[in-house]
Image (cartoon, rainbow, N blue to C red; front, side, top):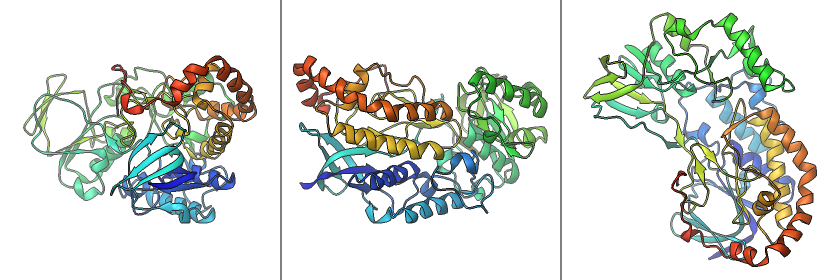
Length: 447
């Protein structure tokens, strides 16, 4: 057993992990960063196709304390994003702390609040705590249909370059950002492209009057007014979705992650993308749709999202409902000390401006936990904090909450002392809890 009990272990060196690492360095908190890949960048290094561009704008994606280069376009490419993250790591001297090709297999809490971390190859280390930054765009979710498709059947994450689509009859399943990006790509180079959408989506243009849409709505505007403004813009710029053969949205704007794409409606009107209803079943290379129609395809691309999963944690330790991790304070659990799960929320637009203050807040939680006997997640829960009801995050509201928390979190020390006296026997039971005996809630996802 290798003793690292004076250091935190940061799992993952993607955009979230890098921001957390920079904050730890600046706050003087010792850590090691464990990355399974051979370089940093996370999804931008290994998970996107070569022609990808961000859907959020440059200004809503860049870190608050590290602007993107002035010569970057409003919507940088995947390579530009990777270069930007590499520059960020170089500027803050993060690389020396990253251990590449270091895959974490299991993390288990010890009775004294430290964590045992097992690596691929069998090496075991003991860390002060664990900060999970493994991302949520890697564990592929597939739909479940009757029958079997005998053509090429892939997930959107398996798509890397346009050559995969050339001269093929392509069916894309899904209506999110990846689905629309791939459908537009297939419309350009494929023989034909259909897109199967089982529900109505809000398809928003990436720019309006030459301005990136995420920058059009000021943060101080109430959400109700934001919705009204966007509906007016859509009525003028887009019109009714039914005129494109697309289903009417079945929810209000922002109640689901919006789809930002300026090409999907263009290609629908040019006959290069054909909207289809939900898939009913597969019959060889034929796909039968919910309206009874069918067609033959060479390739089916499932742009159906990802599971939120933590394969290196015991099943049930992090409760997940749908795509929502049930965490207190956005990153803690009530039963275990020194575990912080970061980056599980889906920010409405870009992640960057939020990550700098969020990472600083995590450092504040770590320092407060050092002064407590009880898990800080338990103190938050007993103080009235609730886990989020959705994985979708309003960036403006989150920013206000973090500014407020910066000044109110120190009050938890007094709350913890009172709680410790009141729950002394129960507290001992919490600290001695073995995650290998956790019985997962059958109503929750178990990963």
